[in-house]
Amino acid sequence: MRISIPISAFVAAIVGFGGTLAIIIAAANAVGATQLQTASWVTALCIAMAVESLWLSWRTKMPIISAWSTPGAALIAASNGFSMGEAVGAFLIAGALLVLTGLFKPLTRLISKIPASVASGMLAGILVSFALNAVKTIPVDPWLVLPLIAAFFLIRLWNPALSVLAVLIGGGLAAFLTGRVGGLPTPELSTLTLIAPVFTAQAAIGLALPLYLVTMASQNLSGLAVLRAAGYDPEPGPLISFTGLVSVILAPFGASTSNLAAISAAICTGPDVHPDPAERWKTGPFYALAYVVFAIFGASLVAIFAVLPQSLIVLVAGLALMGPLTNALTISLKDEHDRMAATTAFVVTASGLTLFGIGAAFWGLVAGLVVVTLDYLKRAAAGRTVR
Image (cartoon, rainbow, N blue to C red; front, side, top):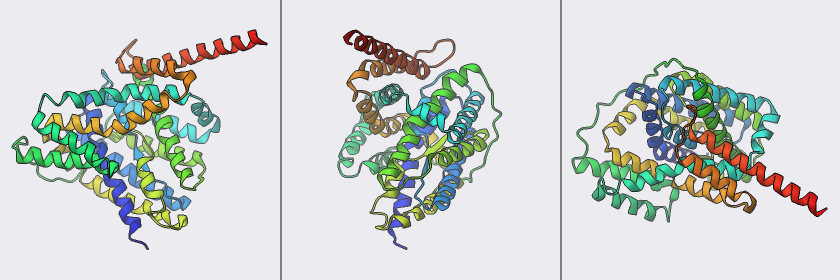
């Protein structure tokens, strides 16, 4: 076996975990999770990554890599007014919708018909607040933040995948050496905490539905595209339904939705992993092994994040989402006919509007679809007039 297989798998796992853990922490804080619940959230997600990647890669003999929904976590972190119990209820609903989507092809086709421009406009509206908050950390602690921002943009010129991880590690060391960290916590093994779900209409519409749509539109569909670009053509239904089922099983322990990976998958599916595409599936078990290690020490990792300066956590989360934000803005404005609809979805979502207890992501999507429909009716009427 080529050494490039485990190396690629471990790099993908480290980049995916370390580069976006700050966003999971922010999501947990937004719904009022305790440190014990946050540790359980991270641990359960790591178990999901291990189980999904191992089973799907072995079953299909393709490099099927899963990840937690980073845009979904950003959506949760940008929400307000929801409790941890309501979040768990929303995770259960979103996971069930993923299962149904995988089982019924018409649902997959229906989601794919949502204009990419509008979905991306909504996603950009969710992500932009993180980028803005990252900039706002500069006056709070300029001597820590400015060098890290400079390092991020320099490192990404050579290795974009490792740039956020470098900022996290470098920033943590700098904070420790300059006395910004009081003391490192005692290492401890992770445990799972059962959290009772709470089901409310506001959480179902304002959190679960947008979480499901974001996970499908910006994660699962992108993950399938990465696999197809690498020469693989798996049946989408079983992959989506299995990740949804695992999400449902682990949601009571705090895990938000998991899905097919895109960036991590790109690291594990290319010719650099192995010249023979039939051998690349072996990255799946090594990727799963890495997440087993993360699951065991998830509580310690969360405890370390808890003692780091808040400005560093906000900065890392914002920088980690710069790439997805750039991609979302690009897609949202690509189609000339849908630019107004995409901009409307972006503005409404970014506004943080809450109406009838339902959050801005839902209203942003609704507003964008209304504008798309009006534009379509106008073009249709114009076409009839010309004829």
